[in-house]
Length: 164
Image 1 (cartoon, helix red, strand yellow):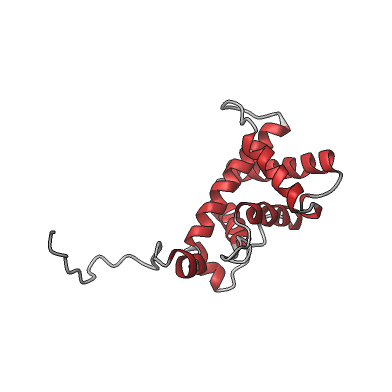
Image 2 (cartoon, rainbow, N blue to C red):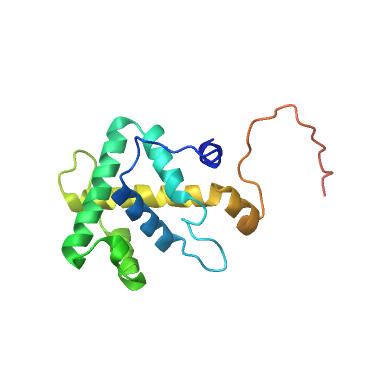
């Protein structure tokens, strides 16, 4: 349903800030860079993440996620002296690798920005992977299978294949 809404031109006003969207897109393109297949931003993963966070996350989950994105941004600026999107490809991959290996800490309240960043990154990575592989373009041109359907049709014709 989210991809259909995005295809229809939906944009949320309650979603991520411009800085957060740039960070999401930059990280998404490290996870799925453009090769002989489209990158994450080529298929619109940033819009999809924005919609999911704005409309499907509970307030407390959304708040923790955007706080974590801001913590990632602050960490990168403090350690690299510039925003994630200003880094070259090697710098971006280095940041993502460090986020990938960072401990998330235990359950409960989070006060450490590094733990907030690690948790937000893990959540973002899951969103990016899900969004990428359920995008119409990846279904058609990369996977060449259909992984999502516009509606449930319980009465669709079905001809079973004979057992082998």
